[in-house]
Image 1 (tube, rainbow, N blue to C red):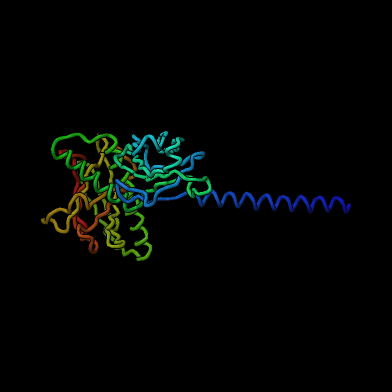
Image 2 (image 1 turned 45 degrees about the vertical axis):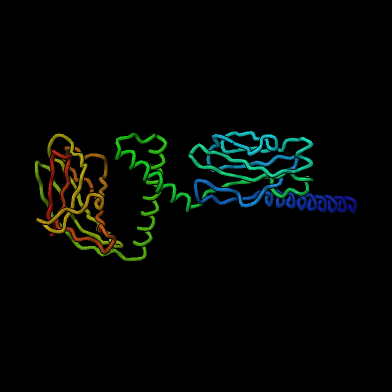
Length: 309
C-alpha cells in the first residue's frame, strides 16, 4: 500500500514537472513571435531580424504574397506560399564571416509592400524571432477604404470598369460600415426612450391602400409604422419610398429614407403587409418632420401617397 502511494506521488511530481516544462516551452515560443502593425500600404519592420543558418524565419503577411525580392540573393533565400514567406540564410563562407545585412521586400497581391532587414546570426542562441507577423490596424482599413472608394469613383467618372475584386471590397466594407452604424443606432435607441404618437390615416390609389398607425422617434431618427394592401392585379412591388415635411415642399433626399417590407411584394389578396420607413435628417441633427409619404412601384408605375395627421 505504501509503495503504491509513493509511486503515485512520484508520478504526480513527474507530471507536474512535465507540465511546467511544456508551459515554459509554450511561453518561449509565444515570445518569439514579433508582431508589426501595418497602418499604410508600404511598411518596413523597425529593426533588423537575426536569422541563424540552421533555422528558418517565417514571415506572415496580411495578404497573399505576389513577389519576394531579396536585396541580395547571395545572402537570403525565400520560399513563398500564399501569405507565408519562409526565409533562410545562404550557407557560404562569406555570409558566415561578414554577416552582411540585406533587405527583403514582399509585394502583396492587393498592392501593398512590406520590407524587412535581415542579418545572419553568429549563433542560433542570438536569435529572438521565429515568426514575424504583419497585422493591419483599423487605421489601415480606414485609409484603404478611402483609397478604394476614390479609385472606383474615378473609374466610373471616366467610363472605366471597376474590377470584380474592387467591387467585392467595396461591397464588404459598405456592409461592415452599415453594421457598425446600425449597432450605434441601436445603442443610442437603448439609451433614449422612444417618443411615439398616433398617426392613423389611410388612402388608396389604383386599388393600392396605404395606411399609417403611428410614428416613432428614436435617437434622432423618425420611424413610420405603415402597411400596404393590394386589391388589384398584378402584385405590388415597392421600389421607392419618399417623404417630405409639407405637401408642397421638397422631398427628403433619397439616401435619408430607407424602408423594409414584410416580404418582397404585396400580393393581390387584400391583406395588409407591414412597411417600416426610416427617415434621417440630412445633417445628422434631430429627427426630421414628415407630413406626407409616397410609395411607388416603379419609376413610371403605380404610386400611392398618404398625408399623415
